[in-house]
Image (cartoon, one colour):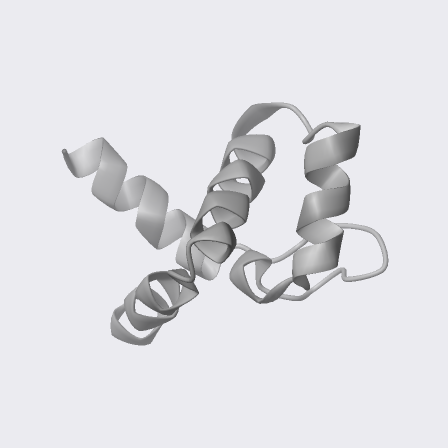
Length: 73
């Protein structure tokens, strides 16, 4: 459970480390960009897992959860 919580906190703080949207919070990336990555393949490692979760959250309209976490942490 603690690992899941830390993963969400890390996601809330994580900014895109490269590319067109470098420096933007992952949760604030445009949906079309995340969908493009989903079709192309997410990067490996933690960043890819975070982006995959962003895709699922955006798909279901739940981005506000991560934004709330960012406000609190």
